[in-house]
Image (cartoon, rainbow, N blue to C red; front, side, top):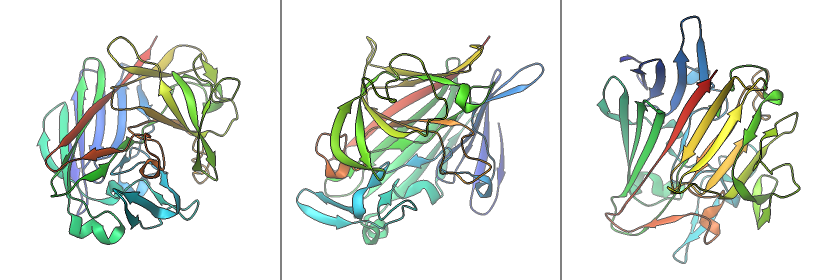
Length: 317
């Protein structure tokens, strides 16, 4: 276990066997996850170190809402709210508030670390979210891979709308993105218009978004939200990204709190970094869910806590 610090962030390296992960207090972000071999290293997650070197949304944690909220407007329990419009792609709010906030390190061991941030209604109310939350993000290396967990507690005195998403960008070890293939057990997708949901939920059948069987990414530009995930007998959903030669793959496992997956090929990231990795993003809600009943927004009562986890495992021949 090691760490290096600057005035705004602390990077922590976690170690277990041949696994390594680098996580940061700035945004509680995941900055690297890789396997160490006798001759080389394999980056499972597209890596960076130091906030100045981040490309796109690498490793971000998205609280209290992932994705875009149309025009930065929403209603909660009949009352209208206006969020700051911070979306470079259009006049929308995007990805919550905590990506640029420094979390406290609340625990640190050789193979695990936890970060916490206290959202105060008075601080975020002017930005359109007058609710108080205690947000804890934990990373732990296990024999089965990297486990990422969240805990969100309503610390205020009124109900609060809550959701969370994560932004891991994955690498399949060999070949380039166009040659990789993905398998994602989603039966539906959220229809977008200018990257904002239209409100329609459609079947993936006979579309480029049907990943129920292994699908090669090719040159397609993906930025889509998949829904209605098939699950195993334990209630877990599984997605995979594989190299063309079949010698390496990344397996993503989502618990029951994640009902949506956003996929993204990074085409909007500035050259030469575009299309360097494939994002398979666990989301507890769809984009613009604050404006669509039944799309995953959790209403937390005072004192109530919302928790969940997802796992990443790299495999190679």
